[in-house]
Image (cartoon, rainbow, N blue to C red):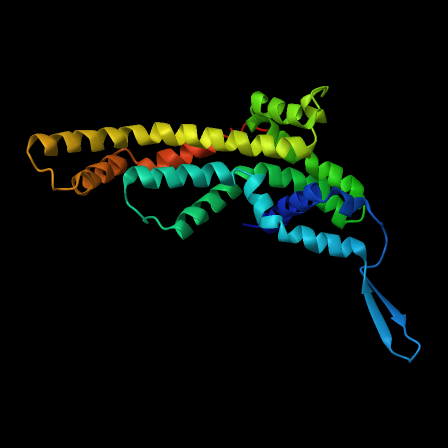
Length: 256
């Protein structure tokens, strides 16, 4: 786990900088806190606007982490899978969120490493300024988000914003890329969820038909079909298949 902390910080830095691009470039070199002497001999403390903007950006960090990473697709697919199994609140929401968070960390690890090496490390060493660190941090995130974004979604938001004349994908601003990426992630998540739902739906239909033919209409089909669905899921090593499919859907290991 050595080096994972800085890489996680690199992603968080990139997210904050991507949301508040003006923060990194505004007022370079100003101290965070200034102290001035009052007329009565007291001291007055003031915080620069740059720090206030940065602290405000931190409040948007959880939403940004969910929307700019693989978290959205993973948590939606896992929620649909739980619904298909019919296990109600098992696994619990906390477990699903934890699985989605750590699987997202695994998928985003190459992006974190690039952000750390290209932006965070030089910035902490004082070799580059905030504005250049911002531009370097946005590159790996853009390289991750663009391949996962559907062209029709990107074109739709570009048309809404009146920016159809984009020269290349590299010129797409984050204001267009982010909503298009989230829309594409939701579409892909529901497609994957539909494919996973089908075999369990077949089991429910078969069990309901058998119970109906036997005249056991008062017995809930869910009670009978649940063991069969759990047995099928365990026999095919369902969790490994789901996690592997989610990770491979992002092409983990195939990036630069």
